Image 1 (cartoon, rainbow, N blue to C red):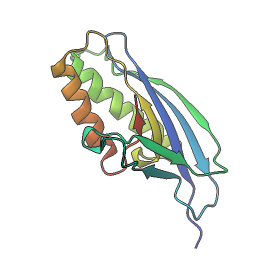
Image 2 (tube, rainbow, N blue to C red):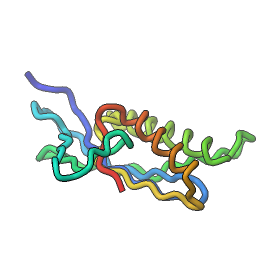
Image 3 (tube, one colour):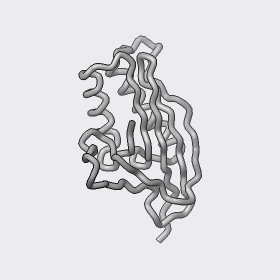
Image 4 (cartoon, rainbow, N blue to C red):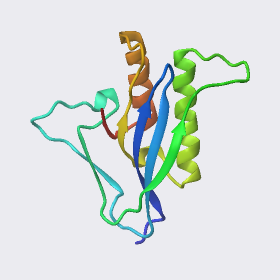
Length: 141
């Protein structure tokens, strides 16, 4: 059985006062192997409850595609508070992933940096990341 084209995505997020999402995407033409495997090392804490895995491995022979930064800034009068920025950043990331034929479960790495970080913002971002990646979390920093 031949699978339809899939993507493996390395996602990086950077923030000024918002969250900026940058993605590297890798589609595979015809693979039987899953594009990403989450590895659970028993010596490391299980971080999947926070929406990320300690280790992910991309399948061999993947082609990388890079998606430029996706911000959550709105200049049309919508709110630009932290939660709104995070929400729109993930919506924009999903749009970019779908445009390249991918989905959140294809992301292999994410780095999220928050300016003026506090426990409330961190909790919101963790909850959003966990919901976005569901049962297939990427590695994360």
